[in-house]
Amino acid sequence: MFPPPYPVFQDITAEEYEEMLCCGCIRAAEYKKDTVVLHIGDRTKEFGILVSGEIYIENIDLWGNRLILHQISPGGAFAETYAFCDVPMMVDVTAVQDCTILFVHLGILQTPCHQSKSWYKKLIYNLLILSTNKNLLWSNRVFCITPKHIRAKVMTYLSSEAIRRGQREFTIPFDRQQMADYLNVERSALSKELGRMKKDGILTFRKNHFCLLKLDDYHGNK
Image (cartoon, rainbow, N blue to C red; front, side, top):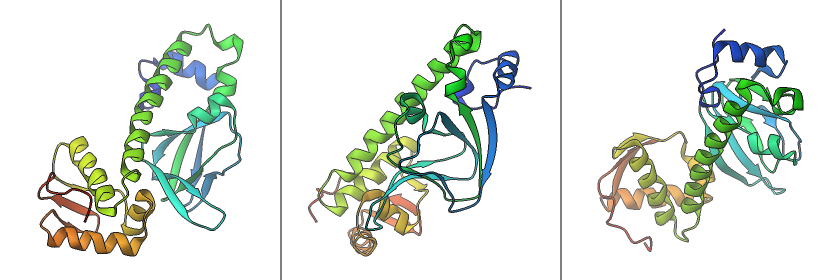
């Protein structure tokens, strides 16, 4: 059996993957839409790899306010930092669609008897690269919510998406409420600002599909 084509298994051979399976450290699970896979306060020694569906990493405070911190698409991993550090989850992991998840148990893999295996260093290196790339995404998230004005938040987010995709026209993975949650703004205020930006000739949009007409004609103060 060959390892799944995900970054965390990069350069791991079929034989090495079989060894990992024999350790009992890999399992698959399915979750229905709107199921919370991991709750705030949970401890886990497993990290997840999304096989199919979509997941949000989010925080819901005591008053029910929702803040989307990150969106996970198929092939993406989550909770690896919590699994490594063995600290309580500070976020919820929620299935936004029906999901299939591959869980890898770091507690089993990190036992001394496995640290001399040929796949061990490869796995740790791949997790380091994965975590580094996710830190870049988290940094972008901070850039999006730091500006005081909604227009600046929107343009920071959409500009980064345009740069990442290499084009000015693209579809984002959020509906309007989810986009508001991601940018930490009110939905009604976001919709009004998008309407103003469209009128100002900065962008056009239809639902979650955007086209940026000019990237530099704003100052975040309108």
